[in-house]
Length: 212
Image (cartoon, rainbow, N blue to C red; front, top):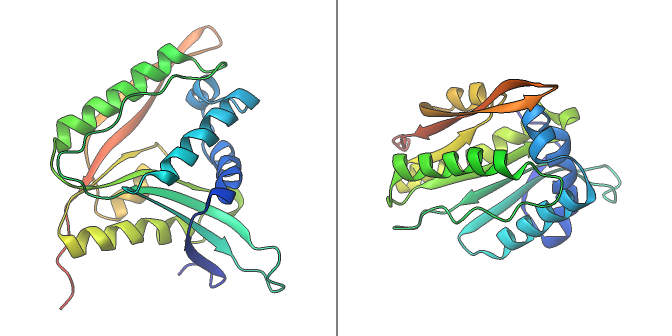
């Protein structure tokens, strides 16, 4: 069961800096060190991208907060970006990467993710979980599950497939919720003069029948 003090709410533009803090603390790997180092330029790029996502009516950006007893210091502990089903909609173009990002690696990895998304889902309407992050100190307390269940409930109500790109840490969680690995995207990341693999799983969940 989730922490009883957690509450699921729609995100606001004022939340975006906190989402950036969560992103840079939750997604740490040899890949993120190359593509998303926590520098002012990369942070600005990431914040601007999410601010744009918030303005897109096809997106649903959610947050989970921990309610404090005094009500004045509620903490944003997790967030997620869901994209609603739109018939014929395909993933948008890749962005221009900021200074400090390994643009060649980012283009290869995210380009392959995009191609896989199109290959697996085509133009069929489906729910898409584009991003889900939880503060490391709050992981395992149910915040991520609250965000995940929101979209899965919608998908089941509409009897639509759900697609996501699972990180190595996220994949085992998504498997428990009925997702299946359809493909994998792997790139070789330069680390201390060697090449180290990093990959995401392209995962699809079929809708479940609604309880009578």
